[in-house]
Image (cartoon, rainbow over all chains, first blue to last red; front, side):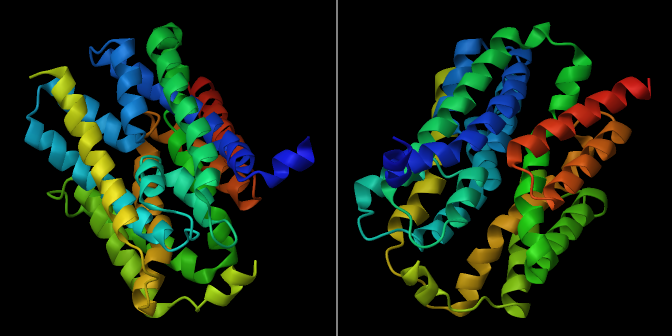
Length: 241
Length: 100
């Protein structure tokens, strides 16, 4: 049984997606709380989570809905905050196996998130659509379920706990960046550069909005990384593994 | 302002950003600079998103710093994502009770 499931790419995707789903469960719980506090129903909260699958984008979008902002503002905010998914999709498009046709790409692109991207790009060699389906399915389920639970039961939690839960999403990001930064000085340099840029935007160049600050910091740091530490040609390694 | 249109705009824009580059790019990118750039993007994005936002994530600087320290230490020892996230949350929660 375990031997068979270990061979099926879909099952491997499901298994690799479990930690993501568990992380999402707790993070989206907090998002569910925020959504209901902003005056939306639990059903609306779940629909937003199931159709968007993006933490920062949803948090910003919910704030715009609550403030009665314009549709243009909504579109622009989502564009800026989620632009990184475009870069991630571009990066991931280089790792797809030959059977990844257009319908499969259309489906899988829905599930490109920070964590799914991080896990998928850490895979040795090419990735298949079935592997991505497994990972996205369980992660999206965890994200939607957590949102529902937070929306339905969040008010029952003490404030001290819901405050502390706010750190989980970022702690997960820390856990994605630190291990490769420990092994590679170039990754460390890029991460530190991005963090320094982000700090400058937060405390000095305060006129730049949060979404733009992230995009500019990331593009700047990745450009510096690419110029100073160009990566080796690893195509042969990929093909062999 | 309709909630349905808000959600449609939100989900539509987010999907298009993900879909267009992922679907349109068929060839292997030859440029070494561009491949290097794409390799560094996820680390740069996550790092910029985390700093300094993580220090504001609990509504209290002290509890956030303690939670962050726990996250960094556990991440350094290659703990799984979920362990790091839950421990940081638990540390921030415990710190909140202690400093009150």
